[in-house]
Image (cartoon, rainbow, N blue to C red; front, side, top):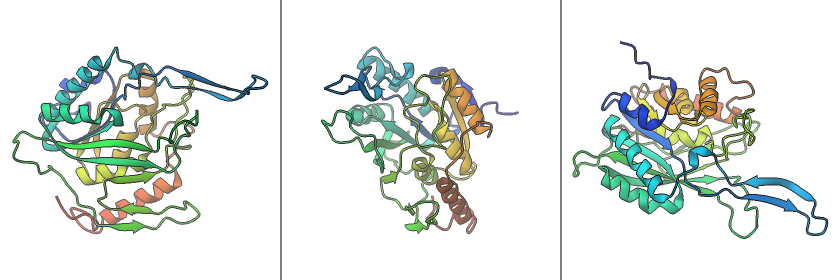
Amino acid sequence: MTDKFLNNVILDDCLNYLPQLNEESVDMAFIDVPYFTKGNRVFDFKSKDTRKKIRKSYNTYMGKWDVFENEETYFSWIEKVLDGCWRVLKDNGAMYLFVKDGFMSFFMKLLTKHKYHFKNVLIWGKRNPLQNILHTNYNQALEVMVFAIKNKEKKKSTPLIHNNLKQQTIQVPRDISNHDYEINMHNYLLTSICQKPERITIMELEEKSHKTQKPIEVLLKPILVSSNPNSIVLDCCCGVGSIPHASKLLKRNFYACEINPIYHKYADLRLKNELQGFSVSKRTKFVIQRLLALNKKRKPLSEYMGGT
């Protein structure tokens, strides 16, 4: 019987989508949930003298998908997502969640409450963060990712799949990038923010892009560590498809859904290689080619992996 969900991005609410997946069918979940930024402020930059606009306005509004009535409503939704993912994850399967740093303590409590075992926090460092537009604070150069596992037996906390990456460096040609790619088990990831040609331009939207699109390069390590080739990676808030795309490039399968019809359209076209103006950067292509080449040197796990 054909699995209609496998390697397809489904247009659906994740709370409706998750119950349709088979129980314990997913090796890892990797989700960039809404941050509930609670902001809808427009900043206009005008000259103090002439009052003329001196740079483009900036709107803190992320989109309808990021709007919740209050924190209670937001965390109630997060709990439902965690429950839905717990049902479809295999025992001790990995859960990765991008979270707003101010909500870390809440997420830790919710994970424990819903039978996940917290393992670690991964920090994404951005080489080129957006500037603090009011010049009243530090630039926001870090994002937080929580790593936990489904935990039926509270005494057992060994991940279902855990490929220990042997520390080494992929030498990236200088005509492609000034930065080499580090393979290691550090809980710190350093990349640039998502930029063109990987940054997707969405013509139907006024803001022209998904404001929180993640670069493929920051997604590679969690997928390499917590899944194997042909494993199934779940992303039930996939936006414009970055996590499914990274999974596909690393020869993994995926389950994915997106509630926003415009984002869904672009994610679907992207994964079918039919999205005009989009391509993976030369650097990312080179890194993935080298990772896949390393993977072929030793079976079933790569030369740079220590085993499960």
